[in-house]
Image (cartoon, rainbow, N blue to C red; front, side):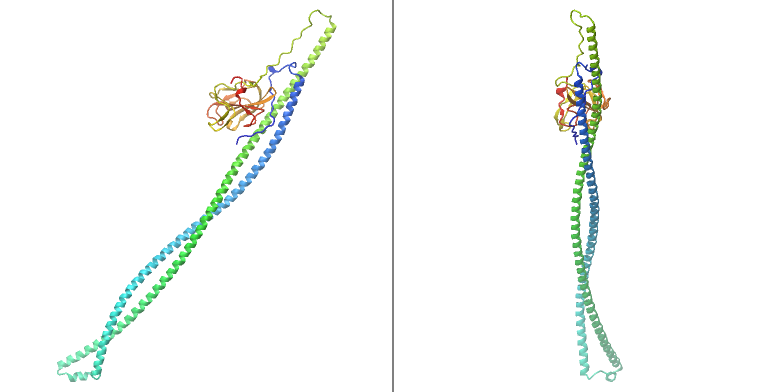
Length: 489
């Protein structure tokens, strides 16, 4: 932020060296008294300005404190938001883990359902085979039943069961007897086998039918349970997805709140920087006022000394006139012209018109007063003289050094306050490699005050020279074009 220093009055009396002090004939005691009064008035004005600056500093300090509190509060809110963001992100992560786990469970259940469906399909094929086998067994059983039924019918027709006696008596020979006994045994055995097979087939049939029925029931039950479980998990998954969507929305909202607060925090930090820069400018202004007040006090003391010298000279002149008058009274009158007295020495020449400043250094003018676009698009409040580093820089006029220090973008800077023809001026010399004057020091026109350099915001060795009409006040409206004021630009 540019320094905005508002000084109502900035007056430093031009201190003239002893060789340039006018005699009492050219400057009356009354004029010196008037100048002393003017200096006292300007000194009072400086005190008023200093009080105003103190009030501004106090107000600025309060604003900085308030700004700091706001920043602290925002930092706390940002910390809470950051914790909420982290917690929300953790919840989102947890939900994603749960959703992933449920998805794996769903995939597992789908695999189980598919497996059960394959088992059901396989069982269905087995049932078809069993049904075919049952059908074959049934046919065999029917054939056996028919055979046994025929046997029973035959036995009933012959009068009942055939006894071994009948077999023996009916035999025609022993061989025939053996054959008849063997045939009977064979028939009896076949009948028993048929009955056993029939019983076994019937038991197998009943067992297979029950097994198939049980498996069918169990598989259907498992399939229904898995489908229900899958639906429940799918519902849970959808619920988690909905919660995740809400958490993501909450995270976006928290992110936006955090960004807004961060933007506000940056704004407050910039405001704090501006306030602190303004506070520094006020401190600079205080230093300027303090230096000017010291210079005014010195000027006042010198003006008082000059007044005392003039009073003393006036007394001596009065006494000389009295002595001469006494001598004339005591001496006889002489013919011719009376004694001539030498007139007071003339007053030292004072710059007149606008040409009141010497050229502060050698070298060409590289940049004039006015708007420019390089190196920055801004107002250029002075004239730049280009030359090599180390080129001497001199005071443009006699005056008092009100500033001699490093001043931000100006780098090493000297400000001299002048009092010329009843008007206060300040000249500024910036970007110096070094200076050899100090605040409060009285300098003469043409006296070397430093050497050319490239300190501060500078693109190369040069002298940036400004003229402020009414006193130095930073980038204030009292900065004027120096060119018309330089005797030999």
